[in-house]
Amino acid sequence: MTELKGILTFVRKLLINLIVSLPFLGFGLYGFLINPEGVPVYASGICIGIGGFLLAVGFLLSFIASFPMPMLVEGEKELILRHPTMRPAYTRMLISVPFFGAAAYLALGTQSPYVYAFVVGLIGLWLFFKGATRYLRNLCITYLVTDRRIIHMYKFLWLYTNEIPVGRIISIQEARSFFEIITGRGSVVVSSGIGARMTIRMEEISDPSPVANELRGLLPD
Image (cartoon, rainbow, N blue to C red; front, side, top):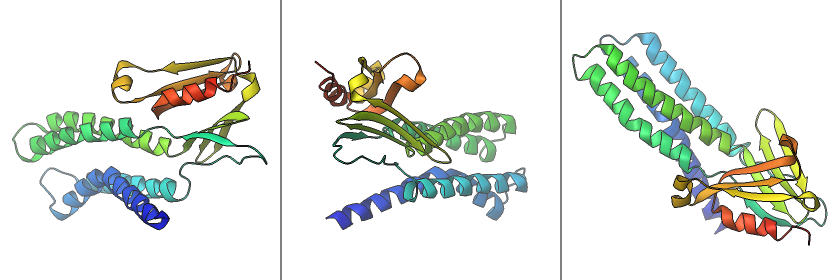
């Protein structure tokens, strides 16, 4: 059962990384192989370069550095382990697809000036990159609650760890917008004082209410 779960996880990550990089690889290969009139060769090369970069970074984060895990001390008990949900990232990337399709239609299927296709494609590119960067960023973040501390860990090209001892917690807040409520996600903010180092934001986690309740149970009487 464990091996099957590992295989399914591998396939899921493989498909996601391919989907993230596929639009750029597809446009680049189309430009090189079909060579449509008016599309410069260097534009196809740029698309392939961007797609290859996203594919390489996605594989690196997914299979080497994804979801870092803090080291626990002897006797420390893990209570909650969460990562930011990928739903907003996936949604942005999906929303960008119609813009890419419209830009391709305007450029190749009509006699409209290329500036129209460029503007529509630029909007799709912005949405896609927002989703792709959010996806890659979320792979590097881990939120961990133990019976001794709350930990926020980020690990990619550098390591960032912020910890708050359980005994120093002074406030716990749950923040959820209307859209986050209907999609079952939100943020939990834990504070032990004033300042960034004294606050941990567990941002965009799925079903945040049990996390907030678990933390409230750790507050000193």
